[in-house]
Image (cartoon, rainbow, N blue to C red; front, side, top):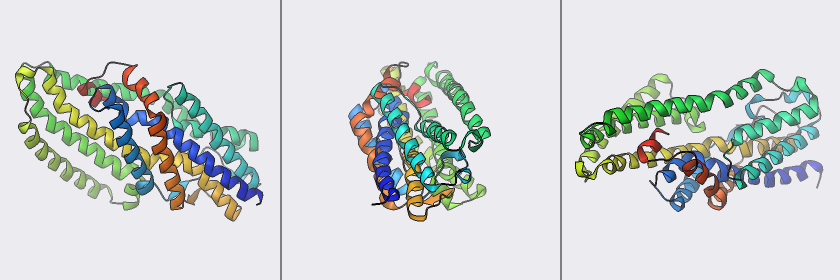
Length: 336
């Protein structure tokens, strides 16, 4: 066994470890609000997230993935393929260990930012500051600052609208039945656009803007019509109080959480298998390209790692995000 084969097999283990930790930590992004609002139990969340993340990773994940995450370094400035291979393995292993430490201490972290930082560190050691794309890195660092505030603002606006149009009205049950289908329709529009523009399979379809918008409009109207019929059949009355409103949004919250879990598997699996694909390409061709084909076996490895990580340690970060940051109800969880 030569050095190339050795590091390829080692990278399979490191890739599985990264996928495991990705599932254990990032599952909180999709299911924590639903668990915190008591829409589903922890056991149900783990089962649903595990299945949907695996399906997303294996069947919706890209079969051609970026080998250098986010274009952080320029591999053409590192001439030795063995150095590239060892560096990618080191980046994968270090990111895995950091996310594991964060998970064991119940801290929510970004696996994407972890692998980006690890690759930047490898680039600095292997080729110096000139290897790193500092403009790209600066944009990523800015996103760390902007994203939480932007997300908080959107959640604030959504929940404020729900309070003013439903919760603070005397006829709140009637308003919940009226607005529930509208929020279902808007949620469907967001899911449809996210699927088309953000998931690998959506990008491969290349529907074009006009077709994408037409499809989104048709799906949203269909969901609105179904939602109206569903809302009118709900056994809720004014005497139920706020619980009646929460019942309407409970279904919406579970639906959005399921979509996030599915798209999470499709998108985030690249954080685990991208470096593995890079090492696989180097071991076979002794070169590294910007994109590399991903064998189905490696996708399955990533999907299994995510699902097992969710099942074994997913509850830790889920408890932090769902219970220890703020008190959640179904309406609040839906806004989140």
